[in-house]
Amino acid sequence: MTHYFAEFSYLLASILFIFGLKGLSHPDSARRGMHMAEFGMLMAIIGTLLHREIVSYEWIIAGLVIGGAIGGAIAQFVPMTALPQQTALSHAFGAFAAALVGISEYHCHGGTASHFTLGAVGADVLLGSLTTTGSLIATAKLQGWLPGAPFTFKGQNLFNLALFAATLGSFVWWLAVPSAAFAFYLMALLSLAVGVMMVLPIGTADMPVVMSLLNSYAGLAAAATGFAISNNVLIIAGTLNGFSGFILSLIMCRAMNRSIRNVLFGAFGQAADETAAATGAEPMREISLDDAAVQLAYARQVAFVPGYGMATAQAQHAVHELATMLEARGVIVKYAIHPVAGRMPGHMNVLLAEANVPYSLLCELEAINPEFPSTDVAVVIGANDVVNPDARDNPTSAIAGMPILEVDYAKSVIVLKRGQGKGFSGLENPLFSKPNTGMLYGDAKESLMRLAEAVRAA
Image 1 (cartoon, one colour):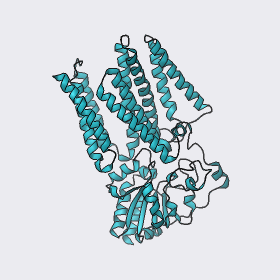
Image 2 (tube, rainbow, N blue to C red):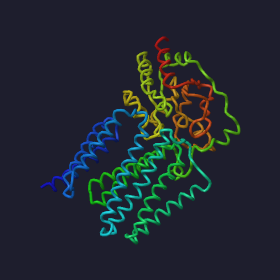
Image 3 (spheres, rainbow, N blue to C red):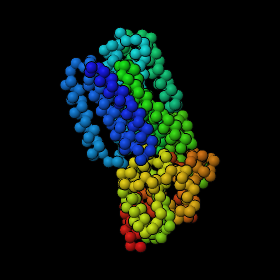
Image 4 (tube, rainbow, N blue to C red):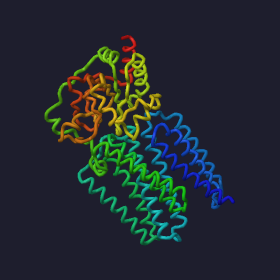
């Protein structure tokens, strides 16, 4: 009876995971989707706790208590602005758990397992190991513990390919001779190195794609774990996670007009655009806080364009406060969201949702671009490459062809920026030098709060 209930729990969990993922496809149903996925995970845990092969519950209960306490602390104390690095760290933990299960399976049953099971164990350890270290490097880059710029050296791509080939060679050697424990553990160690070398050459500007890929790898590692231990719910959940992450990665690449190969091996953001460096940038026009406040207070329509600078300044609440004040004056306010703005998919949406910005005001690139010519003021908050008109107008630019938010077509543009430095990619942005653009320098949160006060007094 217990066995049947456990299998029913797994079936119910799998169904809930599928509907939960479907719910996450739209903000209106996202909360419901999350609750369904949470309940599905609860059912999967209950089903696992009823497994007949469990000898003792002491370590399991200890793990539940410690893990639950850590998860609760993260949910309570980690700010929304740190969500990208928190997500990357979660990928590392999940992948590491999957790799440990694979190592345990080989240690306990390696001599008697079938070749199919051994293949699943090997795939589990390989994917889990490289995802663990890759996610840790991504966390360090996002947190600022490592430089965000790509780390490269001469012949790096050849070195990485040779390292990956050696990893696959160890995998094949071990499958051919399952008793060769040295080959198995060599594969695990090389996989850890592959994860490090895979993410080091990728700059933080490409982190939305990297996060999606790491999510995909972690899911595939979980699916391989499911095949290794004959656990159906792991197979289903891991496959869902793996393929949805990969599809999202392709969508992110399309939004940047780049290929996954270019993201992984192109070291984008390593150097400035040579043409821009040679010709020099046009001077930027600085405006005062009062000038910006008057433009906003007497505008008919205003579009806020958030970027990673808004996240680092934790300015999402200040943006909403200013927008609410403008709406009270009869100004039409909208938010222009680029799909790769920030450091993870949906980064800007999450931050603005935390500030209680209505989803109906968030406009995707295709919807907002036709409205910029009739927009009185576009306020760019810490965004750079996603509003760079060179992507549209300069075929020799490194970001040529990348879909952008065409804020330069607005009647007036106010750019909130810390200083006159370039964006992460190192490219000059002609937007900042256009005659309809005014630069408001300083911390974005402080500038927005002072703007709100000035608008109130206008």
